[in-house]
Amino acid sequence: MGTETKRNPRKAQRPSALAGQIRIIFYTVFICITIVLLAVSLDLMLNPSKNWTDSLAIRWISERRNLLPFFR
Image (cartoon, rainbow, N blue to C red; front, side, top):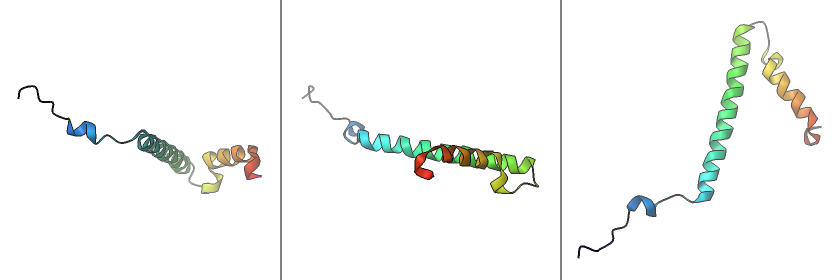
């Protein structure tokens, strides 16, 4: 009776590797979007006369996007 093995309930409910990778991708995209929004907000706060399309971050993204043949 003392040699019974008990299963760990947390171990049986571990998420799959694919779910973990999807979660990491989601968090990465969320963090990147947050960083861009913070950069645009900071630029607009420091230069209130600018429009959001004149923001340094938006111009940088537009220039980089033109380098990819998919967006031309």
